[in-house]
Image (cartoon, rainbow, N blue to C red):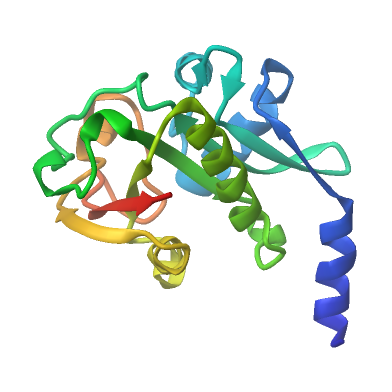
Length: 198
């Protein structure tokens, strides 16, 4: 075992996973805006996303904690709690659109990447989404992530590319105060519409 592998193993054993709850909101907001840019998340948005995570008492959104600090999170909307928009192509999906949950966001603290946090969060969200009645999950993957890691990660976990969308986050950058961490001025990043069947 190399020193790095040993360190990752030690860190992994100290990571705990909890379903998203209001006591974690501050940590989720801080990490989300640090990684994705200012105003990517707000208290109002997060409260809405939290409500959309549920069917009955099953919550599909999760956080990862290390020494009681939020070091990762996955926000997942239950399949009955979101609506398709112009960035969605349900006619191209291989499953009924009414059985698709929405993977809104997956975020891991850059200092903790490589510890398997993202994969554990995904598996926990899938398990809950399946219990809610979903058969697949849709995500819009940020193609400007460093090294295109988000696309590679989602593909490795079984995600299939449906369609690429130009200027996916431009509206948010113009009208909602979103400050893209890679674009100067308004966001011009491309988003990949991807579907992961369970």
